Every structure is written in C-alpha cells, then in structure tokens.
Length: 171
Image 1 (cartoon, rainbow, N blue to C red):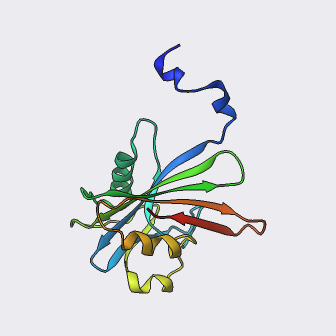
Image 2 (cartoon, rainbow, N blue to C red):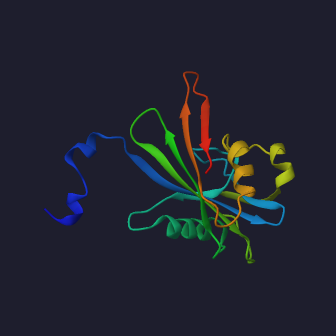
C-alpha cells in the first residue's frame, strides 16, 4: 500500500466527510467588499456574501482563496490571513468546511463576475443589506480581528425548524 493510501483507514469512508470551501472578506478602511449573488445562482441569489468557493483538488486553502478572489473580483491580495474555520452540519453526509480569510484591499480595478455584482459596503451599514444569514454574526468578528491573532472556530447546524444555529468560539 502506498503512503498516500495509508492515510485513509477503511472505516474513514463511513465517517463524516466535508466539502472544503473558502470565504474571503477584503477590507478597505471602514468598508468590506461583498458580492451580491446573481439572480440565477442556486445558493443565495440577491444576497450579499463574502467572495469565495470550492477548494479544488491539489490546492491549499490560501491558494484557493487567492484564486477565488481573482476569479470573482480581478483582485490579488498578499495580506490574506486565515481568520476562522466553520464546519457546517448539513444534516447529512457530506457537510461543509469553510476556511474564512481576511485581507486588506491593496488597490486594483474591481470587476464583477458571473457570480454577482461587487460592492463596497460600510461596516456601519451592513444591517441595511440582505446578507447571507451567518454574516450578521461573523462579519463583525472578522472586521475587528487583528492580524496574527488566533482564528475563531465555528459550527453551524440546522434545528428542527430548518433555522441555522451558529456556535462560535474565540481563543
């Protein structure tokens, strides 16, 4: 058996699995860059969210965040830093693992993509926008996070009424 195959125990196929994703928040002074989901998107059409998407095979989390940022905005950011991790219990298998990154706008022309339109939103006005449901909770946490501080950890799950429940812990 190869060393790569030894990493997987046969029982692992029965265990809880996750789909890895990245979520990026770029800040410019008192504003954050958000994407308003295109009307034809399956998830969150018309809702504001951070930029991001799936981690592709062969990518690391930072590489995926940089790729998604470039694809969805045309921007590059050297200051991206892991701000948190979230496990989303979908009620089945697989779940979702989200690696949340924060960075500072370093300049450049912003362009929207097929994913949606981009907008700088003032942090004092985020509650005036139709946000993806968890952003009301995690965006203030990410905005006040200082570089080099430990990442937060979160778990989302859905209750019996299909309402998202958010459990966060900070170091």
